[in-house]
View 1: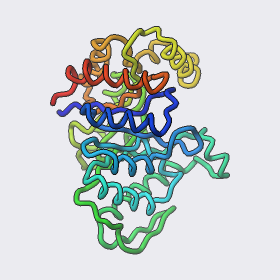
View 2: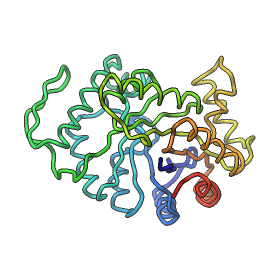
View 3: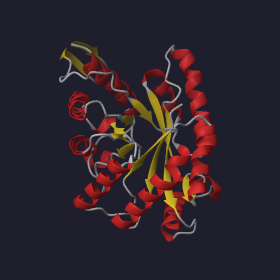
View 4: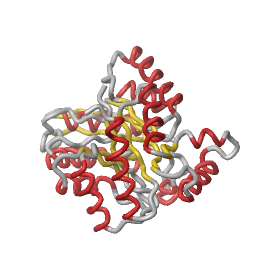
Length: 308
């Protein structure tokens, strides 16, 4: 099982474009495994597909992906073409994670659309995207999408792995039915392990298989004092949004916070439950803080965690 740790951009760092490239260059030179961008069309985040194309041009070693691309907001043929193009530019370093979005996303109201059928729409999109990337001639008839025509070019030299994001039962079933891997988000190690077991049980019904080290988790990161003001603010916000009446320890368990040994122990607890791929989201105040957090991760955590 190959254990690897990638990074998302620093939460709260408010990066400029030059800040971002300074950080990316440092990650590339320091041996960070991968960079991940989330999808928030109406939020402050940059658009992920544009960022992956830019990363393909800027970097030579790091992999990169979406965490996660919200499928119902987009067109499957355009996604397939973008994937094929970015795969070609990067010479095989694209690793997309796909999701269905959340019901209260402001996108739905802004565009006058409904989140109700987003699961079925996403399932069709995954099937069509896969066909477009792999087949010369595509014949697809679904409830929501129809396509009769050629597959996309440039044709990828490999089967681009399509991972599924999300913690719901539907995400577990979608992974077993259609995914090449699973990336959960912000849950404790016990729940991550339960999700993996659920996927493996569902795979028996679908007759498919997923590589044993294609299971991962996104976690929040801060190498430093557990009572850091930024950590406390983020915990308070998450408790209000995710678990207003729940156990505070549930929120604490999704933060990889403390000394390098504390962070290592948190990641190790997930490895013990079957996770081998990680996306850490550093809590940083600005570009200098993000650079410092990345340096601490690279020098004092990754050597203890990754099995290179």
